[in-house]
Amino acid sequence: MKHTILLFPLIFVGNIIANSYTISGVVSDKVTNKPLIGANVYVEGTSIGAAANNKGKYSITGLKEGSYVIKASYIGYNSFSDSLLISGDNKNFALDFNLSYTTIEGNEVIVTAQAKGQMDAINKQLNAKSLVNIISSDRIQELPDANAAETVARVPGVSIRREGGEGNKVVIRGLSPKYNNITVNGVKLASTDNDDRSTDLSMISQYMLDGIEVTKAGTPDQDSDVLGGTVNFLLKKAEPGFHGNIITQGMHNGLRNTYNDNKFVVDLSNRFFRDQLGVLMQVDLENRNRGSNEVGTGYYLQGATLDTANPLYLSSLNLNDWIRLNDRQNTLQVFDFNFPNGNISYSNLNSNIDKDITRYSQSYDLLGNNRFMSSSEGVNSIQVLTESWKLNLSNEDLVFDAYHSFSNSVNNDKYYNFSFREQDAYDSTVMDRSISFVQDVAIHDTGKTILNQYDF
Image (cartoon, rainbow, N blue to C red; front, side, top):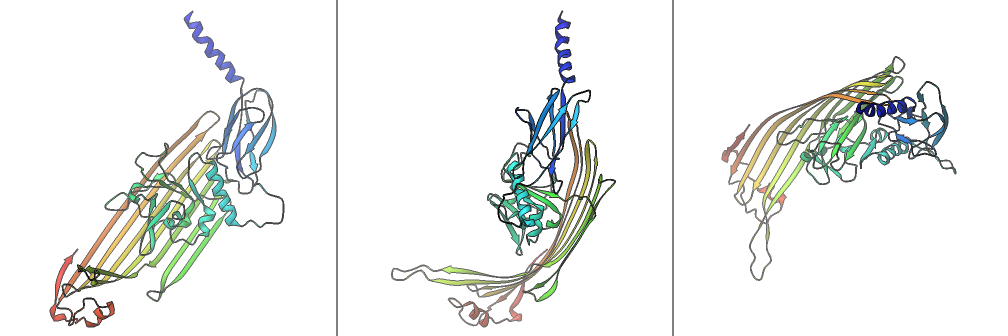
Protein backbone atom coordinates (compact mmCIF):
# COMPACT_ATOMS: atom_id res chain seq x y z
CA MET A 1 0.00 0.00 0.00
CA LYS A 2 2.84 2.39 0.80
CA HIS A 3 4.43 1.71 -2.57
CA THR A 4 1.20 2.64 -4.37
CA ILE A 5 0.96 6.00 -2.58
CA LEU A 6 4.54 6.89 -3.51
CA LEU A 7 4.25 5.92 -7.16
CA PHE A 8 0.96 7.70 -7.83
CA PRO A 9 2.22 11.31 -7.51
CA LEU A 10 5.26 10.46 -9.63
CA ILE A 11 3.08 9.15 -12.41
CA PHE A 12 0.75 12.12 -12.05
CA VAL A 13 3.59 14.65 -12.31
CA GLY A 14 5.03 12.78 -15.26
CA ASN A 15 1.71 13.10 -17.11
CA ILE A 16 1.58 16.84 -16.42
CA ILE A 17 5.09 17.37 -17.77
CA ALA A 18 4.39 15.23 -20.81
CA ASN A 19 1.29 17.29 -21.67
CA SER A 20 2.94 20.73 -21.23
CA TYR A 21 4.46 22.87 -23.98
CA THR A 22 7.45 25.21 -24.08
CA ILE A 23 7.97 28.44 -26.02
CA SER A 24 11.56 29.68 -26.33
CA GLY A 25 13.53 32.10 -28.45
CA VAL A 26 15.82 35.12 -28.59
CA VAL A 27 15.03 38.81 -28.06
CA SER A 28 17.41 41.07 -29.99
CA ASP A 29 17.86 44.56 -31.42
CA LYS A 30 16.33 44.85 -34.89
CA VAL A 31 19.24 46.90 -36.27
CA THR A 32 22.33 45.50 -34.55
CA ASN A 33 21.02 41.98 -33.77
CA LYS A 34 22.58 42.30 -30.31
CA PRO A 35 20.74 40.46 -27.51
CA LEU A 36 18.51 42.55 -25.23
CA ILE A 37 19.51 41.32 -21.79
CA GLY A 38 16.65 41.26 -19.28
CA ALA A 39 13.89 41.76 -21.86
CA ASN A 40 10.40 40.83 -20.61
CA VAL A 41 8.52 38.08 -22.49
CA TYR A 42 5.11 37.03 -21.21
CA VAL A 43 1.75 35.55 -22.19
CA GLU A 44 -0.86 38.32 -22.44
CA GLY A 45 -3.70 37.99 -19.99
CA THR A 46 -1.68 35.80 -17.62
CA SER A 47 1.19 36.12 -15.16
CA ILE A 48 3.25 33.54 -17.05
CA GLY A 49 6.49 34.87 -18.50
CA ALA A 50 10.28 34.94 -18.43
CA ALA A 51 13.23 37.33 -18.66
CA ALA A 52 15.90 37.08 -21.35
CA ASN A 53 19.32 35.98 -20.10
CA ASN A 54 22.69 37.49 -21.00
CA LYS A 55 22.45 35.85 -24.43
CA GLY A 56 18.98 37.28 -25.04
CA LYS A 57 17.40 33.83 -24.71
CA TYR A 58 14.11 33.19 -22.91
CA SER A 59 12.00 30.12 -22.18
CA ILE A 60 8.35 29.89 -21.06
CA THR A 61 7.37 26.43 -19.85
CA GLY A 62 4.27 24.68 -18.49
CA LEU A 63 1.85 25.84 -21.20
CA LYS A 64 -1.22 23.86 -22.20
CA GLU A 65 -2.45 23.27 -25.72
CA GLY A 66 -4.13 26.30 -27.23
CA SER A 67 -3.68 29.71 -28.85
CA TYR A 68 -1.60 32.36 -27.08
CA VAL A 69 -0.50 35.95 -27.63
CA ILE A 70 3.16 36.37 -26.62
CA LYS A 71 4.45 39.90 -25.93
CA ALA A 72 8.05 41.11 -25.63
CA SER A 73 9.02 44.45 -24.08
CA TYR A 74 12.24 46.27 -23.22
CA ILE A 75 12.84 49.75 -21.85
CA GLY A 76 13.51 52.19 -24.68
CA TYR A 77 12.07 49.83 -27.33
CA ASN A 78 8.66 49.35 -28.89
CA SER A 79 6.81 46.35 -27.47
CA PHE A 80 5.84 43.64 -29.95
CA SER A 81 3.16 40.93 -29.76
CA ASP A 82 2.80 37.75 -31.80
CA SER A 83 0.15 35.02 -31.73
CA LEU A 84 1.08 31.36 -31.61
CA LEU A 85 -1.00 28.16 -31.76
CA ILE A 86 0.59 25.28 -29.88
CA SER A 87 -0.69 21.74 -30.30
CA GLY A 88 0.36 18.31 -31.49
CA ASP A 89 3.22 16.03 -30.55
CA ASN A 90 5.90 18.73 -30.82
CA LYS A 91 6.29 20.13 -27.30
CA ASN A 92 8.82 22.88 -28.14
CA PHE A 93 7.97 25.99 -30.16
CA ALA A 94 10.40 28.73 -31.22
CA LEU A 95 9.47 32.41 -31.33
CA ASP A 96 12.09 35.16 -31.77
CA PHE A 97 11.57 38.90 -31.31
CA ASN A 98 13.41 41.75 -33.04
CA LEU A 99 12.56 45.00 -31.26
CA SER A 100 13.13 48.51 -32.58
CA TYR A 101 13.87 51.74 -30.72
CA THR A 102 10.98 53.84 -29.44
CA THR A 103 10.48 56.95 -31.57
CA ILE A 104 8.58 60.17 -30.93
CA GLU A 105 6.68 61.77 -33.79
CA GLY A 106 7.53 65.40 -34.46
CA ASN A 107 10.23 67.38 -36.20
CA GLU A 108 13.13 65.55 -37.80
CA VAL A 109 15.84 64.58 -35.32
CA ILE A 110 19.21 63.20 -36.36
CA VAL A 111 20.39 60.54 -33.90
CA THR A 112 24.18 60.31 -33.83
CA ALA A 113 26.26 57.29 -32.90
CA GLN A 114 27.02 58.97 -29.59
CA ALA A 115 23.33 59.20 -28.69
CA LYS A 116 22.76 55.59 -29.73
CA GLY A 117 25.71 54.37 -27.69
CA GLN A 118 24.55 56.29 -24.66
CA MET A 119 21.02 54.92 -25.05
CA ASP A 120 22.37 51.36 -25.15
CA ALA A 121 24.24 51.98 -21.90
CA ILE A 122 21.21 53.52 -20.17
CA ASN A 123 18.94 50.65 -21.23
CA LYS A 124 21.40 48.10 -19.85
CA GLN A 125 21.61 50.00 -16.57
CA LEU A 126 17.83 50.13 -16.22
CA ASN A 127 17.47 46.42 -16.93
CA ALA A 128 20.41 45.28 -14.80
CA LYS A 129 19.72 43.07 -11.78
CA SER A 130 21.85 45.30 -9.52
CA LEU A 131 22.91 48.95 -9.31
CA VAL A 132 25.56 49.31 -11.98
CA ASN A 133 27.00 52.05 -14.20
CA ILE A 134 27.65 51.00 -17.79
CA ILE A 135 29.77 52.70 -20.46
CA SER A 136 28.96 51.41 -23.95
CA SER A 137 31.55 50.58 -26.61
CA ASP A 138 30.39 53.47 -28.84
CA ARG A 139 30.85 55.89 -25.96
CA ILE A 140 34.34 54.55 -25.21
CA GLN A 141 35.49 55.10 -28.79
CA GLU A 142 34.28 58.71 -28.77
CA LEU A 143 36.08 59.74 -25.59
CA PRO A 144 39.63 61.08 -26.07
CA ASP A 145 41.03 59.15 -23.11
CA ALA A 146 44.61 57.95 -22.75
CA ASN A 147 43.69 54.54 -21.33
CA ALA A 148 40.93 52.52 -19.67
CA ALA A 149 41.45 54.16 -16.26
CA GLU A 150 40.68 57.59 -17.72
CA THR A 151 37.41 56.26 -19.15
CA VAL A 152 36.29 54.72 -15.85
CA ALA A 153 36.90 58.06 -14.09
CA ARG A 154 33.94 59.56 -15.98
CA VAL A 155 31.53 57.48 -13.87
CA PRO A 156 30.02 59.39 -10.89
CA GLY A 157 31.61 58.40 -7.59
CA VAL A 158 34.81 57.19 -9.28
CA SER A 159 38.14 59.02 -9.38
CA ILE A 160 41.65 58.01 -10.37
CA ARG A 161 45.19 58.33 -9.15
CA ARG A 162 47.70 59.73 -11.60
CA GLU A 163 51.35 59.20 -12.38
CA GLY A 164 53.00 61.73 -14.65
CA GLY A 165 49.58 63.19 -15.46
CA GLU A 166 48.19 59.83 -16.64
CA GLY A 167 45.53 57.95 -14.69
CA ASN A 168 46.58 54.49 -13.56
CA LYS A 169 44.50 53.36 -10.53
CA VAL A 170 40.81 53.59 -9.67
CA VAL A 171 39.34 55.03 -6.46
CA ILE A 172 35.68 54.10 -5.83
CA ARG A 173 33.64 56.03 -3.25
CA GLY A 174 36.88 57.38 -1.78
CA LEU A 175 38.29 53.94 -1.00
CA SER A 176 41.89 53.18 -1.92
CA PRO A 177 42.55 51.14 -5.11
CA LYS A 178 43.67 48.16 -3.01
CA TYR A 179 40.08 47.74 -1.79
CA ASN A 180 38.59 47.55 -5.30
CA ASN A 181 38.29 44.64 -7.69
CA ILE A 182 39.34 44.80 -11.37
CA THR A 183 38.09 42.08 -13.73
CA VAL A 184 38.18 41.34 -17.47
CA ASN A 185 35.11 39.44 -18.70
CA GLY A 186 34.52 38.53 -15.07
CA VAL A 187 38.08 37.22 -14.55
CA LYS A 188 39.94 38.98 -11.74
CA LEU A 189 43.14 40.71 -12.85
CA ALA A 190 46.31 39.95 -10.91
CA SER A 191 47.77 42.72 -8.76
CA THR A 192 50.54 44.81 -10.34
CA ASP A 193 51.79 46.51 -7.16
CA ASN A 194 54.58 45.18 -4.96
CA ASP A 195 53.02 46.55 -1.76
CA ASP A 196 49.28 45.86 -2.11
CA ARG A 197 46.73 44.20 -4.40
CA SER A 198 45.88 47.24 -6.52
CA THR A 199 46.01 46.99 -10.31
CA ASP A 200 47.60 49.44 -12.74
CA LEU A 201 45.07 50.14 -15.52
CA SER A 202 47.29 52.42 -17.61
CA MET A 203 48.42 49.38 -19.61
CA ILE A 204 44.89 48.49 -20.80
CA SER A 205 43.87 50.14 -24.06
CA GLN A 206 40.33 51.49 -24.35
CA TYR A 207 40.23 50.34 -27.99
CA MET A 208 40.05 46.70 -26.86
CA LEU A 209 36.85 47.16 -24.88
CA ASP A 210 33.24 46.44 -25.81
CA GLY A 211 31.96 48.02 -22.60
CA ILE A 212 32.70 48.80 -18.96
CA GLU A 213 30.55 47.85 -15.95
CA VAL A 214 31.14 49.65 -12.65
CA THR A 215 29.53 48.36 -9.45
CA LYS A 216 30.16 50.75 -6.56
CA ALA A 217 29.29 48.31 -3.77
CA GLY A 218 29.61 44.64 -2.95
CA THR A 219 26.81 42.42 -4.26
CA PRO A 220 25.89 38.78 -3.44
CA ASP A 221 27.08 37.51 -6.83
CA GLN A 222 30.63 38.85 -6.29
CA ASP A 223 33.56 37.66 -4.22
CA SER A 224 33.46 38.74 -0.58
CA ASP A 225 36.92 40.31 -0.64
CA VAL A 226 35.66 43.58 -2.15
CA LEU A 227 35.12 46.53 0.18
CA GLY A 228 34.90 49.27 -2.43
CA GLY A 229 33.54 48.25 -5.81
CA THR A 230 34.19 46.27 -8.98
CA VAL A 231 35.20 47.43 -12.45
CA ASN A 232 34.53 44.81 -15.13
CA PHE A 233 36.04 45.34 -18.59
CA LEU A 234 34.16 43.59 -21.41
CA LEU A 235 36.40 42.59 -24.32
CA LYS A 236 35.37 42.93 -27.94
CA LYS A 237 34.06 40.00 -29.97
CA ALA A 238 33.92 39.48 -33.71
CA GLU A 239 30.83 40.90 -35.44
CA PRO A 240 29.33 39.38 -38.62
CA GLY A 241 31.35 40.35 -41.69
CA PHE A 242 34.95 41.40 -42.12
CA HIS A 243 36.02 44.45 -40.11
CA GLY A 244 39.38 46.18 -39.96
CA ASN A 245 40.54 49.37 -38.26
CA ILE A 246 43.84 51.23 -38.19
CA ILE A 247 44.49 54.15 -35.83
CA THR A 248 47.72 56.15 -35.94
CA GLN A 249 48.62 59.16 -33.82
CA GLY A 250 51.64 61.43 -33.72
CA MET A 251 51.97 63.92 -30.89
CA HIS A 252 54.04 66.97 -30.03
CA ASN A 253 55.43 67.14 -26.50
CA GLY A 254 55.38 70.81 -25.54
CA LEU A 255 57.53 70.36 -22.42
CA ARG A 256 60.38 68.64 -24.29
CA ASN A 257 59.61 70.13 -27.71
CA THR A 258 59.81 66.69 -29.32
CA TYR A 259 57.71 64.72 -31.80
CA ASN A 260 58.58 61.23 -30.56
CA ASP A 261 55.22 60.42 -28.92
CA ASN A 262 53.13 58.06 -31.06
CA LYS A 263 50.35 55.48 -30.99
CA PHE A 264 49.44 52.70 -33.42
CA VAL A 265 46.38 50.43 -33.24
CA VAL A 266 45.28 47.77 -35.73
CA ASP A 267 42.48 45.23 -35.35
CA LEU A 268 40.94 42.64 -37.68
CA SER A 269 37.85 40.52 -37.16
CA ASN A 270 35.53 38.24 -39.11
CA ARG A 271 33.07 35.40 -38.68
CA PHE A 272 33.23 32.15 -40.62
CA PHE A 273 31.10 29.05 -41.28
CA ARG A 274 27.76 30.90 -41.39
CA ASP A 275 28.81 33.19 -38.54
CA GLN A 276 29.43 30.28 -36.19
CA LEU A 277 33.17 30.92 -35.69
CA GLY A 278 34.34 34.39 -34.72
CA VAL A 279 37.96 35.57 -34.75
CA LEU A 280 39.20 38.94 -33.50
CA MET A 281 42.81 40.09 -33.15
CA GLN A 282 44.18 43.46 -32.10
CA VAL A 283 47.60 45.02 -31.53
CA ASP A 284 48.06 48.31 -29.67
CA LEU A 285 51.47 50.02 -29.44
CA GLU A 286 52.21 53.35 -27.75
CA ASN A 287 55.25 55.44 -26.81
CA ARG A 288 54.77 58.48 -24.59
CA ASN A 289 56.97 60.85 -22.61
CA ARG A 290 55.03 61.63 -19.44
CA GLY A 291 57.75 63.88 -18.00
CA SER A 292 57.11 66.88 -15.79
CA ASN A 293 58.79 69.71 -13.89
CA GLU A 294 58.00 70.11 -10.21
CA VAL A 295 58.71 72.83 -7.66
CA GLY A 296 58.43 72.25 -3.93
CA THR A 297 59.05 74.65 -1.06
CA GLY A 298 59.30 74.42 2.69
CA TYR A 299 58.59 77.21 5.17
CA TYR A 300 59.77 78.02 8.67
CA LEU A 301 57.38 79.65 11.11
CA GLN A 302 59.22 81.74 13.69
CA GLY A 303 57.67 82.36 17.07
CA ALA A 304 55.87 85.68 17.39
CA THR A 305 56.16 88.34 20.07
CA LEU A 306 53.29 90.25 21.63
CA ASP A 307 53.54 93.14 19.18
CA THR A 308 54.37 91.22 15.96
CA ALA A 309 52.74 88.63 13.72
CA ASN A 310 54.23 85.19 13.11
CA PRO A 311 56.91 85.72 10.44
CA LEU A 312 57.02 83.03 7.72
CA TYR A 313 60.41 82.27 6.16
CA LEU A 314 61.38 80.16 3.15
CA SER A 315 63.42 77.26 4.58
CA SER A 316 63.90 74.94 1.60
CA LEU A 317 63.47 74.83 -2.16
CA ASN A 318 63.18 71.64 -4.25
CA LEU A 319 63.40 71.57 -8.06
CA ASN A 320 62.71 68.28 -9.88
CA ASP A 321 62.91 67.38 -13.55
CA TRP A 322 61.12 64.09 -14.27
CA ILE A 323 61.56 62.15 -17.51
CA ARG A 324 59.02 59.31 -17.81
CA LEU A 325 59.25 57.25 -20.99
CA ASN A 326 56.31 54.84 -21.22
CA ASP A 327 56.48 52.04 -23.77
CA ARG A 328 53.16 50.17 -23.90
CA GLN A 329 52.23 47.02 -25.86
CA ASN A 330 48.85 45.27 -25.88
CA THR A 331 47.71 42.22 -27.81
CA LEU A 332 44.23 40.69 -27.82
CA GLN A 333 42.94 37.45 -29.34
CA VAL A 334 39.30 36.39 -29.03
CA PHE A 335 37.82 33.22 -30.55
CA ASP A 336 34.21 32.12 -30.12
CA PHE A 337 32.13 29.34 -31.66
CA ASN A 338 28.33 29.17 -31.58
CA PHE A 339 26.40 25.91 -31.80
CA PRO A 340 22.64 25.25 -31.49
CA ASN A 341 22.48 24.96 -27.71
CA GLY A 342 25.35 27.15 -26.58
CA ASN A 343 28.79 28.51 -27.34
CA ILE A 344 32.43 28.25 -26.36
CA SER A 345 34.89 31.15 -26.29
CA TYR A 346 38.56 31.82 -25.62
CA SER A 347 40.17 35.18 -24.92
CA ASN A 348 43.80 36.15 -24.36
CA LEU A 349 44.82 39.64 -23.22
CA ASN A 350 48.54 40.35 -22.91
CA SER A 351 49.40 43.82 -21.58
CA ASN A 352 52.94 45.13 -21.10
CA ILE A 353 54.29 48.49 -20.04
CA ASP A 354 57.90 49.58 -19.52
CA LYS A 355 58.38 52.79 -17.53
CA ASP A 356 61.86 54.29 -17.81
CA ILE A 357 61.96 57.00 -15.15
CA THR A 358 64.82 59.49 -14.70
CA ARG A 359 64.86 62.29 -12.13
CA TYR A 360 67.25 65.23 -11.75
CA SER A 361 66.82 67.14 -8.52
CA GLN A 362 68.28 70.16 -6.74
CA SER A 363 67.36 70.93 -3.14
CA TYR A 364 68.35 74.15 -1.38
CA ASP A 365 68.59 73.77 2.42
CA LEU A 366 68.42 77.38 3.58
CA LEU A 367 68.54 76.71 7.31
CA GLY A 368 71.57 74.42 7.07
CA ASN A 369 73.34 76.40 4.31
CA ASN A 370 73.54 73.29 2.10
CA ARG A 371 72.67 72.43 -1.47
CA PHE A 372 71.77 68.86 -2.45
CA MET A 373 71.96 67.47 -5.98
CA SER A 374 70.68 64.04 -6.91
CA SER A 375 70.23 61.92 -9.99
CA SER A 376 68.14 58.76 -10.05
CA GLU A 377 67.07 56.29 -12.69
CA GLY A 378 64.58 53.47 -12.46
CA VAL A 379 62.90 50.98 -14.77
CA ASN A 380 59.49 49.57 -13.89
CA SER A 381 58.28 46.74 -16.14
CA ILE A 382 54.80 45.30 -15.67
CA GLN A 383 53.35 42.38 -17.60
CA VAL A 384 49.81 41.10 -17.11
CA LEU A 385 48.56 38.01 -18.94
CA THR A 386 44.87 37.13 -18.67
CA GLU A 387 43.22 34.27 -20.53
CA SER A 388 39.91 32.50 -20.11
CA TRP A 389 37.88 29.64 -21.54
CA LYS A 390 34.10 29.78 -21.26
CA LEU A 391 31.50 27.16 -22.15
CA ASN A 392 27.75 27.77 -22.16
CA LEU A 393 25.15 25.06 -22.74
CA SER A 394 21.42 25.56 -22.37
CA ASN A 395 18.03 24.19 -23.29
CA GLU A 396 14.50 24.74 -22.05
CA ASP A 397 15.14 23.08 -18.68
CA LEU A 398 18.86 23.38 -18.00
CA VAL A 399 21.58 26.03 -18.19
CA PHE A 400 25.20 24.92 -17.77
CA ASP A 401 28.15 27.31 -17.56
CA ALA A 402 31.81 26.41 -17.09
CA TYR A 403 34.93 28.50 -17.33
CA HIS A 404 38.64 28.36 -16.70
CA SER A 405 40.67 31.51 -16.15
CA PHE A 406 44.29 32.43 -15.59
CA SER A 407 45.78 35.79 -14.69
CA ASN A 408 49.45 36.43 -14.00
CA SER A 409 51.36 39.61 -13.19
CA VAL A 410 55.13 40.16 -13.31
CA ASN A 411 56.60 43.35 -11.84
CA ASN A 412 60.33 44.05 -12.34
CA ASP A 413 61.88 47.12 -10.70
CA LYS A 414 65.40 48.51 -11.03
CA TYR A 415 66.41 51.69 -9.22
CA TYR A 416 69.62 53.72 -8.82
CA ASN A 417 70.12 57.01 -6.97
CA PHE A 418 73.16 59.25 -6.40
CA SER A 419 72.98 62.23 -4.04
CA PHE A 420 75.63 64.94 -3.47
CA ARG A 421 75.84 67.70 -0.86
CA GLU A 422 77.53 71.10 -1.23
CA GLN A 423 78.51 72.68 2.10
CA ASP A 424 78.47 76.46 2.65
CA ALA A 425 76.43 76.75 -0.52
CA TYR A 426 75.48 80.45 -0.26
CA ASP A 427 77.57 83.60 0.05
CA SER A 428 74.73 85.69 1.42
CA THR A 429 71.86 85.40 3.86
CA VAL A 430 69.01 83.66 2.07
CA MET A 431 66.39 83.60 4.79
CA ASP A 432 63.29 85.61 3.95
CA ARG A 433 64.38 86.03 0.31
CA SER A 434 62.73 85.09 -2.98
CA ILE A 435 63.23 81.83 -4.87
CA SER A 436 65.10 83.55 -7.72
CA PHE A 437 67.44 85.25 -5.21
CA VAL A 438 68.31 81.89 -3.63
CA GLN A 439 69.32 80.48 -7.01
CA ASP A 440 71.36 83.59 -7.88
CA VAL A 441 73.52 83.57 -4.71
CA ALA A 442 74.24 79.81 -4.80
CA ILE A 443 78.04 79.34 -5.09
CA HIS A 444 78.11 76.00 -6.99
CA ASP A 445 81.54 75.09 -5.61
CA THR A 446 82.44 71.54 -6.67
CA GLY A 447 85.40 71.58 -4.28
CA LYS A 448 83.00 71.57 -1.33
CA THR A 449 80.68 68.99 -2.87
CA ILE A 450 80.76 65.45 -1.47
CA LEU A 451 78.89 62.21 -2.09
CA ASN A 452 75.99 62.23 0.32
CA GLN A 453 74.07 59.04 -0.47
CA TYR A 454 73.91 56.10 -2.87
CA ASP A 455 70.87 53.84 -3.22
CA PHE A 456 70.13 50.90 -5.48
